[in-house]
Amino acid sequence: MNKGDTLKKLNRFEEALQYYDIAIEKNPEQADIYNNKALTFEQLNRLEEALQYYDFAMNKANTLKNLNRLEDALLYYDYAIQKKPKVSDKLNLKSDYFTTEYHSNI
Image (cartoon, rainbow, N blue to C red; front, side):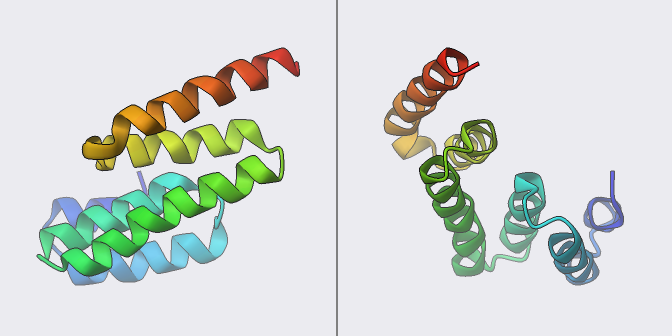
């Protein structure tokens, strides 16, 4: 667990956001950081900002897929599925397809 997660658990949301920014700079490929930042924005009732980070994870998944980085793309699709259940059926189909595609390329 990183410092941002710990601060979020302590309800120190603004500080947590700062540490998520640092973590994103160090690990821009790590989907869970974006997800945790979005969840923190939700705790602050800053829903539009939360959506930006959820959307970022989905856009990143599509870009990674296009780069044939299927394993990385699947991770981002999984986060998008968790956070946007209304569109999860479509995303599940995508995720299933890429899982099959990924395993056939091994």
